[in-house]
Amino acid sequence: MVALLALALLSPAQTPQEEVVAWVNGIRIEENLGPLKRNALLDLAAQRYAAELAREDRFSHTDSRNQGPGERVRQAGYADFERVAENLALNTQGAQDTVKLWMESPPHRQALLTSDLREMGVGKAVGPSGPVWVWLGGARFDDYPVMVELDMPETDRDEVSVWASGAANATNMRWRWAGSDWSTWFASVNVFSVPIMGGNGERMLEVEYRMRSGAVLRASDGIRRTQ
Image (cartoon, rainbow, N blue to C red; front, side):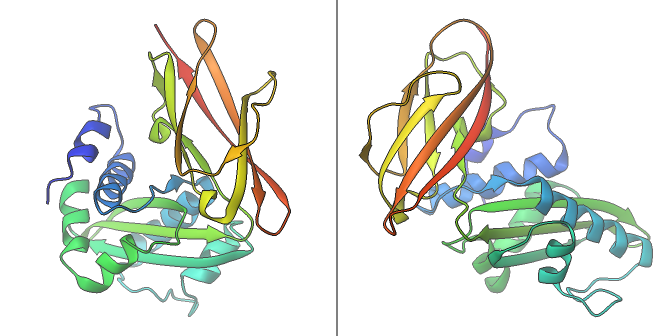
């Protein structure tokens, strides 16, 4: 398994969880699927469950309270979801090996490549039987994240690429950097580019979708500009 985009997204300073995110998104894009935005609530649910499995030396999608992933993400605050998927791995030694294991297993591969997921979270803990990995994918009603530069923390470019997960369900979109004027409405597209004006520092991009239902929904993502 070699995902060239995943290799480009990796950096030496990343945590194992961040490396899983990079591998999963690299593979999804190579499979012509949308990337998944990392979500703090899914991270929380995944890390809680990884720690629980490691502590109890168990390995199951059903926890000791007879609850499944849906109940666990809801308890972490990830409510009003339309879809949740979960993958587990035990005693794999790194992110690449873990994702490779999932990709070689048809049900786990299907979970990673589910087309209507929009977010993900990752947890890792070490127990008596070795490292425990938990990956969660999710999608919430009326929540369509955007990703600037595939969630890279910073850029030195004068123009950035934006992934809009709600484009397929919208007729028109517009964008602005926080504090500036909105662009004109344009026909919905999954990927578009926007210029960055000004000097270094944090930027917050806002995107509005005009949905086919007539509702207008907003999403945002930040990035730090360095030169």
